[in-house]
Figure 1 (spheres, rainbow, N blue to C red):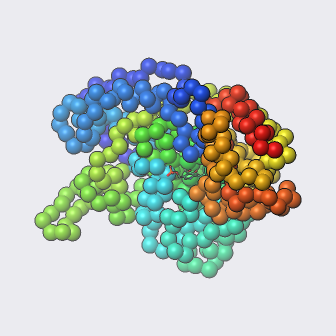
Figure 2 (figure 1 turned 135 degrees about the vertical axis):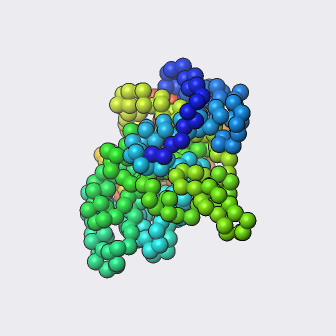
Figure 3 (figure 1 turned 30 degrees about the horizontal axis):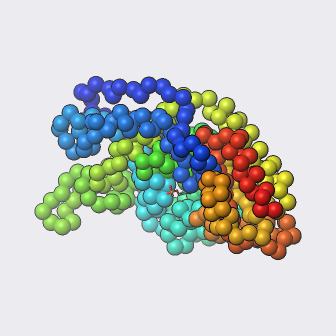
Length: 419
Ligand SMILES: Cc1ncc(COP(=O)(O)O)c(C=O)c1O
């Protein structure tokens, strides 16, 4: 990992260990963690602690600026370590996952073919060049592995084997919460000489994600889904393509030398190449604070608690005859705390508005920036349920660290009234 620390400064005071706690407003039931998770107390504390010192990053000799530079680079180190970055990976701060995947899309060597599945979020469907391959949504995780192996075999047979191939997959679906077999897909990709990128936007808030253990080449994450709501994301991965690519944002900070002629410029290598302009210090620090907090937490216990709540939520929905769950894989496929569903005979936007107005419950409605998948799953749900009165969009409830059984029950009770 490329990190430049400012050596002579004292270390920042560490934030006192706090319980893994998230902020919220009493009485407001937030069941929309998958869109943006609430702020972790650790993130708020880290930001508050730094705010008096707030100054420029990488741009000043003053003590405040030096401290901010140190905090930013320490955040890079912490986030990279948390996600298992290899020593020579770049850890590049971005605005979010969309930004991270667009950056990767712009860094692809000429002639790269990108292979995705149609079940992806738009952020992992749209940044890729023309000629990219979109595989159909598989029936189960094993089907995904088989389909990728077949597609890569065909691609390698029909195209110049010297041309790069990038497979890009999600770790967990933002529509169904279902987990994808990332390690197996990585093995298949590498067996065919391809690289693999992981969209961990929805997986990282619920489960440990380790680049090295999964053997993925790139990883993209959003801070605001990981309890760090200050607008930072990260792209972590192999340095070679990133150092060879044109800078994602041309400007100050991305250069090592600029001469008098318009194009007389030497671009920096390392993360700075793609982080032109003043960086989002507070976002980076907030994200690092959450990573530190999660690294010290009992993740297995947190996951077990979430799975119990998820089971309560899904059982509650299943018991309502007018509710149909959306799913890609079988009902027992491993998943994180996200469930999409429809209320038969009800427009989903109307249901969401009613939940908010009458019950102070926040859920998401729509097609969740995964239009191809959501439309397909709505069709599948209509077929499975045999109902003709399904709406054309869906509802999504998603849970996380601050969610409670009482909140889940309130949603189920509110939906029961619609039957
Ligand atoms: C799986 C997945 N990937 C990518 C994104 C894009 O994240 P962001 O809007 O933070 O860029 C989302 C957002 O919902 C997502 O769920």
